[in-house]
Length: 310
Ligand code: NAD
Ligand code: UDP
Image 1 (cartoon, rainbow, N blue to C red):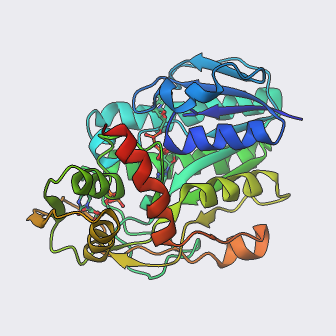
Image 2: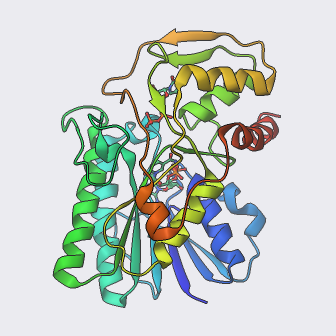
């Protein structure tokens, strides 16, 4: 049994991770400022004897005794990370700095939830970890993309300079139950719109692609990465099946049996055209690959939103 800190543990991915770690018998400290996360995500575990909830903002330092840190704290949806871009940069840079300082002090292993966004609008396809990316440092997504790039740099520098034991997960688009109704990302938007009979908002012509990973696969990958020995280089975690946004819309409409119709809206600035992970490294080093097909994952997610909308 280990004492494990999960920052951002009340969020979408974080809450699934907390649940899995408790199931594995660990003691879990969930740290969150509840900006995009919610206590409701962990309500069913409220009285769990090995779970402790801490309200804290990672832009401030914190002192805790722990063996491992999963550092997930950061809004992930463009709508929320662009709401206060300066705060997003602080969260990524100061937050990661503080968690690395803590990891160094207590000799904990730390895993950073990085992102496929560090590849920007990629000129290489699919994206391998060796690719340096094509990122605009001045645009509306930069607070997040560049913030995560600095976070990765900090991880590597603390490793080289202070021998901190690090893991870097580059997470690709992930979806599932416990995404907030107002999350603003594509899967939750489409399901909520389809279920409530509203128009399905397709940005641009819907020909841009993404690869969608179901959350149970993703958290399994995070735990494998944390517990595998000697893996300081980043590892892509995502589902390599690629879909256009239009294809996703049609799948959601069919599965929800919705009569909603698509409406085309302007494409946001710097919206990446294509995205698909090369997961060879995760397969080789972690023995990991996603098991849940998009259709199955959507079927498991739709009832959650239906319940939320009641
Ligand atoms: P989320 O917004 O649901 O969760 C983020 C959590 O961090 C929330 O609980 C939020 O309240 C908390 N948080 C935000 N700022 C904080 C701060 N300053 N101090 C303390 N807590 C703070 O998003 P998610 O989808 O669960 O993403 C979790 C992590 O995974 C993020 O770091 C995100 O960048 C990364 N990631 C997610 C995806 C995805 O598709 N879901 C893709 C790539 C990377
Ligand atoms: N998108 C869309 N309609 C929506 C929300 C998003 O067409 O209601 C598009 C968006 O422009 C992008 C893709 O879906 O091309 C994925 O967007 P999301 O915000 O989920 O994640 P990210 O852009 O960070 O991959």
